[in-house]
Length: 472
Image 1: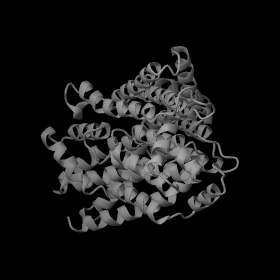
Image 2: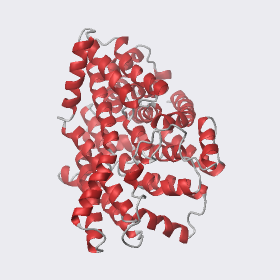
Image 3: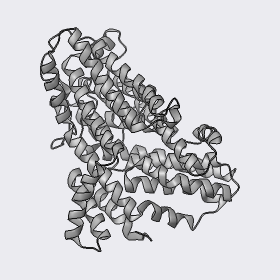
Image 4: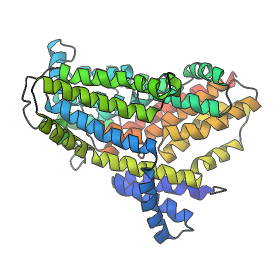
């Protein structure tokens, strides 16, 4: 659309509304996608349906999108391999033997700590934390919704605070493209970290929830249900097939923590190495999607080598386990595919540009900072992508801050912080979807239980940005 109007927000709103009302994520995303292309086709729903199918296929033509889908399937293979080897069980037993985790609160703290220390990439963070902590949550009768909330609140919020990972590389590139001198971009990003109020609020609130048992709203009901031994809500549809977890058969070798630790270490170390290689020796210039795929493949290869050395499985058995794991994550890959396709049609409609344009008409120095946060949140909620929001907002805030003669760092922080907040609240967000999968919980249940906490963090961040703006 050349001149986007209010109609451009209808497809994402339809997808979000249907997801909440019907709990059918696939159909909700498909419905929003169909409506989007029908609007672009002059409200012809027949043409819109054909265009929606064609656009979904086209999504895989983008190398970055294809790599994300492949990463998801490879991680499914890795999770199944590590689970079948007894690696997760061995690591959990090792933690309990050392009395590092002796109850529900310890299990929650473990999930939070993993989310904080593995800051290489948000999807890796949630998958590792979910795989490790899930058995402990089930054993100590914590709800899987609580696990999904904790890993979702310590993945993207931590990753956005670190410049030397895929998130930092992407945003530094966007700053340079928006006109910030390359030598100044890193300095601006580093100074913006101090103003990234939502990310700090989300991480701190998650810790407070653990320490002070701050369960309220739907989360309180989920915890009460889990305390009775009910892992999932009756009728819930977990985002991961339980067979992928590897707990349905006895491992052929003693459960050893090394069988989980080594593949994860390789996976984490390979991420910056991939950024360094793809960036020709410059981490900041690296390709995040390529590096993530390389890291997951390296982790899987390490697991295979380790298990072959221990004569735990034959190559044929490892292939069968890997295919089972990849198959278990096909539903997630399909949701990601539909979410990426919906993001593409919202860009065609100019959804983000419309929302940002409406806000630009009321900009003034006094309200600019909190308004940037609110607008960025709205865009992220609508399109389900924090990275997509950054791509929309950074080119807007850079010249706007310069025109007003204001320091760019707080406004960059407001744009980034809002992108994280809106993404946390959105049921069509890829990060939210992967968190549901990693915790093996119902996706809509995760959204409903997380929303009160995300809104609390968002309110705190809005007040902080308003106070900061008053002193600029």
